[in-house]
Image 1 (spheres, rainbow, N blue to C red):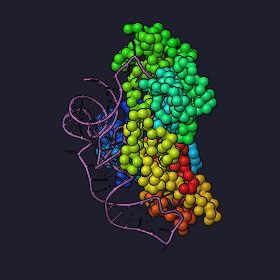
Image 2: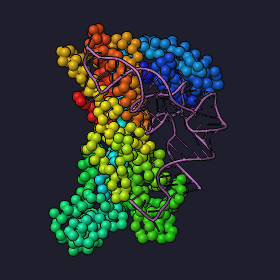
Image 3: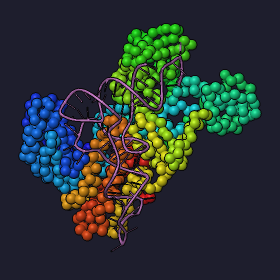
Length: 563
RNA sequence: GCGCCCGUAGCUCAGUGGAUAGAGCGUUAGCCUCCGGAGCUGAAGGCCGUGAGUUCAAAUCUCAUCGGGCGCGCCA
């Protein structure tokens, strides 16, 4: 919620009112865009409304701008606020608004009063949204690729919650497929190996060392009793034992990575409750599926897909895709107004057919978003870390977390758009210098905390949230810039939420921390002789602390009082 | 061949039609009698892959083209 004495909102509303009353024949959905100009001589807020209106009204934009400016200048609400210093017209029709120190002082009061709610928005109207992420099959430990998806999914969920959505986090497990079957056979092979018998790991089996540990555990618990059981009879046991064990490990790794799910959804649920069959039946009845070559095909070409897709193979076994059609139908049946899937980027070819499936089963594909997560290139001091897929030995998420910590790992995973590749340098992530943005930001937070501690050590009492900050403080450009960034926080949240883009927040934090450090270097706080100036600056850094803390919380990164 | 993503400073990348395209790293010149120097300030560095088009306005939209990645299975 943006504070009522926020000049941005005041201006926005007033300007739109003026446009509505001064000009005719304007589309009802016309709303002026505001932005923070890059250059000091362009004011603090500017709008291109006159240029956009020029097109509609077929009039010179400068004439329109002059009319708007005159109306703004004579507006009583704006005059009484004392927030506006002056309004200028710039070519070819920009309206540049210069704000007074009083505005910035008021903005700081807003942050302090709203505290942890500052920046929270109601974009979702408490509608239900599901974020499904990670969803790695429990056939092996999570690798760093999963970790990036985990961080992105988790932060998207946090941001959606902060912007008024009712969020559910879900992890989907394909426990019914061939992969799990392979896991069972691979574990059984290791069991035989450890007991000194002939063994053969299946062609598409899992060769990782972790299965030896699990096989050893089985030997310790159950001895040699499975040596004489035929493979087809014992594979289910090995599959379930290994799968559960690995899933426990995944949950443990996720917990250490500060990620918890509301629900683990298993594919077998779809089979047991006949949901796949009923979805297939629905498609057939509506003429969206047909039989050919002994298989059942989905007519996805009717829904903008490249080609039709097999749902049930000639051998009678349903495909992964058939389960996904039923699964996504089930998601919407569960009442989600919106469904978000986080996938590895190599699955992008799959989007069109899942959307087709959603549409064919009677739901709106517009309510479905896929976030694609690109590769992570792991580096150490600039050199690529060998990640050969030869034996499935990706670097495990857990190894990275153990080496550089959860905070740095999460933060680095979130510094780039999720659909572009990411270079992750372990040495930089471990560094405790300004080279490392995590420490740079955490240091700003700890530094503010340190100043506040020192203030109290001197036996002083914190100023009230509504303490009137002397406007002259904002004659300093570092102070202006810092508070201007605070006023942008709700916009950044909105941007991150609407575009499902966590990297917006990491970028914002780096800027905010930088602006704070610059401010700190040029503005003496505790040792400032003028008491009111000192307290005013103190309240500014208290507000900065709130926003850094809030944003770090959204990223799931710790905000330390001391370092 | 068809489809999707990406080409922006030496490197890694921001930039959802606006003014003089930004940040970090790297290079380089400076700032500690002072609240946390784990910090700050400055400089150098760009035909935004290329060519057309739409627009008052294009890194951003359209088309073409060249480079890089990925996907196109009765696999998951």
